[in-house]
Length: 198
Image 1 (cartoon, rainbow, N blue to C red):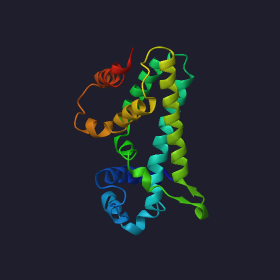
Image 2: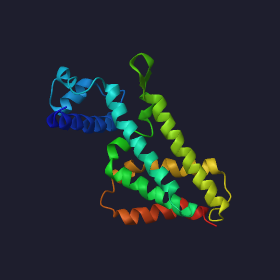
Image 3: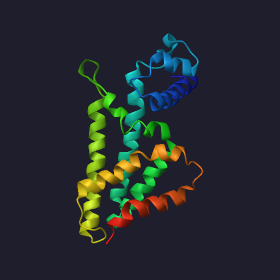
């Protein structure tokens, strides 16, 4: 693949992410994407195979970024509460750097497909990555309770609340882009973990 072709593919993915964010995956057509990048629908297929391929090319890499981040944090020799704080910081950074791709995480993943004939396992791969991340988060949260830094609460509810807030941060941040990242990190850590600390 030439540099020009790679750049064109990046442009297609970036503009597709914005369209999926604005209209939703199901309501966005190949023609919409082609119009957005300024080419004919037929020409678009020189760079991508399908709309499904675009969705997978957006969702799977962002899911892998989340997993890589939390795996690295787990390996750190830090108290669990500090690991939770770092997870929040990392999620903020990922959101700021990839707002359109992150916007697909809460809802658009349901449109991922599996196709055995085409050796396409996008849905299963995404679910495995998501489950790995959530189980890792819950494990760290439980350890923070065991270490005496967090109150003994209903872990599933607490983790759902924290992760839901972080997954939807892209929407709030879109209206508050001028806020300093360090302030955002400090405030979110305080708001998400403050009431849970012993």
